[in-house]
Length: 133
Image (tube, rainbow, N blue to C red; front, side, top):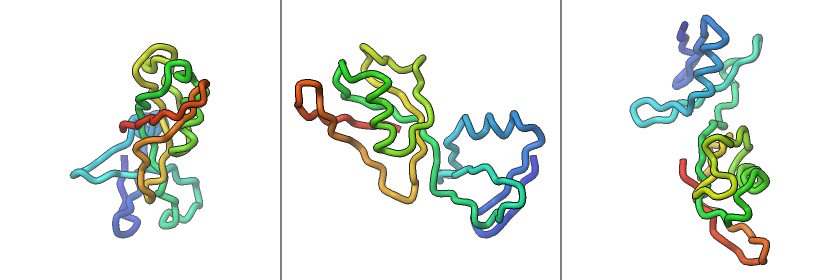
């Protein structure tokens, strides 16, 4: 891997193999010295100094969702509310009976992260659903 300084706080990482690039992106988010490292794929001939670094993917656990709503549809709804839903981890999520749903979401790190969201149950009640990174 090659690392090149682009400007203050921005670096270009060039991987020798595409599989390494994919694994680094999929394994994030990354941090160094308690600071978030935001990664983005650079397209050839793109101005590297102007690459948008506001979105970062996180695994998010959704707690407190009504049992009947613990399904892929509510995970998608909540994922879109807190960011852009990237993936629903159906192996780790208890979509029917578990205590949480786990999703991967692209979140705008330049904005405050919501900690909870009100959802309406099938009975018409509102319930507070919390998120944990």
